[in-house]
Length: 113
Length: 116
Image (tube, rainbow over all chains, first blue to last red; front, side, top):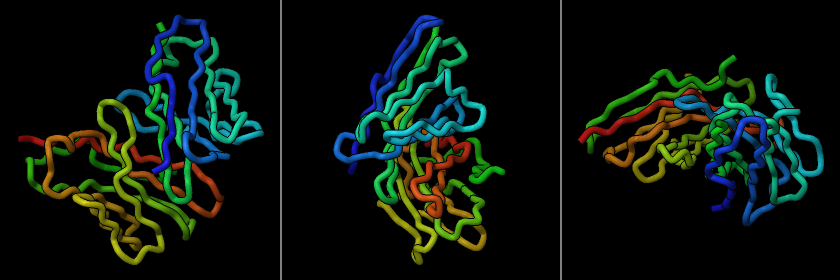
C-alpha cells in the first residue's frame, strides 16, 4: 500500500519556539493532505485540509496563524506550530488518500515545556 | 451534528472470544465509505476494514468483519478469535464522496482490552 511518512515522531520544545512537522507521500502524489490533532484518550479532530499550490482550509476554531500549513509540492505538506505553548502539546497526525483508501503518517507527539 | 457515534468507551473480551464494536453514522450523501482503524499505544493508525455504501456484501478481512446495516446506518466491527495483541483503541470513520477528496470523520473510539 501507499506510504505516508511523518517526521519527527517526537519533539520537545520550549515555550515560545516554533516546531515544523513534515508529512511526505513516499510513493504517490498527494494533491490534498489532511492534518489531525489528537488529545490523550480522545478522537482525531480535523484541523485543516492542505492543498498543493494553494492555501490550506482550516476547520472552525483552528488558528491559522498558530498552525501554519504549507503544501509546496505534491509529496510534501508541513505543519508549523508557531510560538508554541504548553496547551499546544498534543499528538498531530497527517493523512493522504488514494482512491477510497486513506493513509496516515506515524504521527508526531509534541510536548511544549 | 455528530456524524459517527461509538457508544462504547471501553470493552473487555476474553482471549479467543469474538467481540463486536458498535458504530452508527449519519449522512445524507448516498455515496460514502466506512472505515475501521486500530490505534495501539504507539499512536499509529492501522487500517482494518472498509465498506462502501453501495457494497452489497459485508466486508471481511481475516479476523475482522463489518456488519453493515444500511437502513439502520450502522457499521459494527466484529473481531473473531480475539488475541492479546488486539488490545488497543478502535475508531470508526466515514468519508462522504460527493464532495471529492474529503477527510475522514472519526468517532470517539472504543478501547478494547483483551483478557487472558
